[in-house]
Structures are given as C-alpha cells and as structure tokens.
Length: 217
Ligand SMILES: [Mg+2]
Image (cartoon, rainbow, N blue to C red; front, side, top):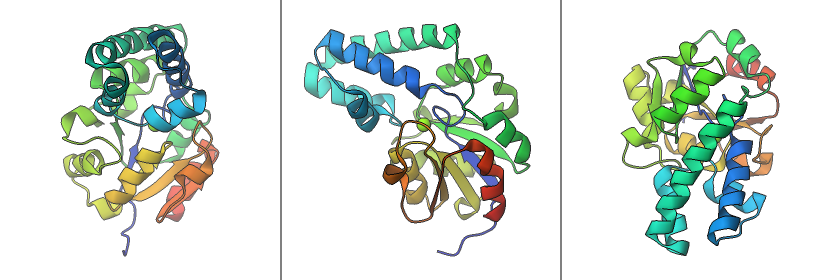
C-alpha cells in the first residue's frame, strides 16, 4: 500500500501516554489469585493488556462465570482508581516526545472515557488531548479490530492512510495494521519487541525517539 505523508498521530493511552499498565497487571494478578484464576504476570499481559472491557470480562466469565466476572471488573476499576490517585506518571520520555510532535494528535483507547479523564488528568496530559479522546465504548468491536482507529480518523477528518498509531500492545498494533495505518510499536513497556513486529510497523524503545521516527514517516 502506498502511504500518504502522516497528518495525524493517534496515541493509545495506557502504556503509551500514562504508565498505568504496570498497575493494571499487578491488580489483575492479585484479583486472579483472590477470585480463583491464578495468572502469571506474562499471562495477564498476553490475555488482558490492550483489550476492551468486553473482551476481558468474557474471558473471566468463561472461566469463573458471569457473576464473578462482574465482581472482578468492579474490584479492578475501584483498585485501579485508588492506585492512580496514589501516584501515576506519564510514560518515560512522553512529555518530551509531545513537545517534539507538531502534527495533530488524538487518543484512541480500550479504556473508558471516565478512566481516561482520570489518568490523563492526574498526569497533566488531558488539556493537550481535550475533545480528541476516543474510547472503544464508541465502536462495536475493540482492538485488535480496526474499528476504533477508523472511528478516530473519521472524527478527525483524516484519511486512514495518513494516520500513524502509537501502541504498546499486540492487539493495538494489529488494530492499526488492520485499519491500514502505520504502526509505531513502543517496546519500552510490558510487551516485548517480538510481539509487536509486523508489516508497516516500526518498533522503538524510547519515547524520546518518537518525533524523529514520525518525521521520517
Ligand atoms: Mg496500551
């Protein structure tokens, strides 16, 4: 596919803008142990990270039933909120990267709007993205389906072929590729580089590199 110059940079939120995935993994391991599905750190990353509420709850329900899945999710949201209040930081190097990116930007996340208002607010990033924040709650299918990125591009009035997506999860880079967008896979977090590689995907390890990579197209 012939790519157009980049006109819009679409950021995932958790693990790309805010350093929340470490919290999420710790809490999921904790809840699994409490509620009857012991999961390792790597299993949580593989099954849950980058996925929508629906996908996560479906997996838990298949294993432990609907009622436990609902309880698990309620506990996760409550404990996550507390942990974010106790201390959440932007991803290392991200504030510097945002200074270096002059193209229009937006956010497209598997998380809810309420969660993003909170995490982006606590880390001082909300203002930069206000009015350009999209959630998988707005589309039929979450990542790895392309729906959310295509929705964000449409709302921003940009051709998908002119969009770049910054993602830290495997379902996220898969969704970007399925949407016909360039993917920048951040391997400085929880997902190793080999899980992010694929066609049209640039894998990088330090957010400070991002403005230069985007400028190269
Ligand atoms: Mg993510």
